[in-house]
Amino acid sequence: MEKDFTILGIETTCDETSAALLRADGTLVSNVVHTQIDIHKKYCGVVPELASRAHAVKVAEVVKEALGDNKIDAVAFASGPGLPGGLMVGRIAAEAAAALRNVPVYGVNHLEGHMFACEFDKVEDKFKAVKTLEFPLITLIVSGGHTELWHVKNYGQYKILGRTRDDAAGEAFDKVSKLLGLGYPGGPPVSREALNGNPAAIKFPRPMMPGTFEFSFSGIKTAVSYYLRDHKDINKADVCAGFQAAVVETLVAKTFEAVKKYKAKNIAVGGGVAANDMLRQMMTARGVEENVKVNFVPRALSADNGAMIALAALRKIMYAGKADANKKINPNMKVKSW
Image (cartoon, rainbow, N blue to C red; front, side):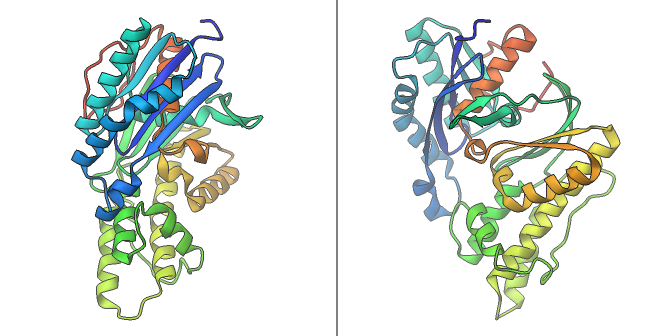
């Protein structure tokens, strides 16, 4: 593959409309993201119908801005998992761009994109996919819609270890933020409030679910709800600090249980919640203790974006010989080996 081989990645799975250009040498030429936060914040959560309409309105503009005057050799889009309407908009946009430029179009897994985004790093004020993922590794994907733990033997060789049985970690942050009147999305305001609180002041449950690598965060959210119901005078900072500690300690403990069982020496953490300071600090410190390398996605690329979709397609082309040309969308798509 030539170093200037360039792929357009389109991401429309939830509430970000994004397109990016990535070269085979790892250079991120552009990454345009249009967020829908202003649309959904009054509902304190994503409204699927509104999200789909917003994607349809903005996707052409976003793709045009990302393309500029650059030539492309392929187009990739996130074909799942995600909201059906958003996935359809992304597929149509990708097919249109590919037809206009007479290049192939590929559908890729949104969750793989979050893992591969851990390869990006800042190089001279620009992002470039220069970090090499070392296998075998344990991958934690933690976002508003997903919380999953994988054992990854190599590029395209995945074994799902566990996923959330109810709320995703990011979803729990959103719901607790709503309970406290802190706004949407919930992660940033809860984390900021927690800085002024005592994480040991309120002991919320840690749903470890012994014997499994599964997650469950609805119970923590419910515990916060009951605490607020039963206490008239509350310290919001302590509530946020206690809640955040419960979620983060659970994520770290489960991840390192998997590291121990599968004798891995590397971890990749992707998804929007990967931007959380406490998670980064605790995961990194535990990694130093146990001589395990922890790779985090850069904060600027932790939320949904076209760059990670382009990189997922590029790695599949490079290591599988070709990307999956199946353009069917699948809102419930699972990660599977190539």
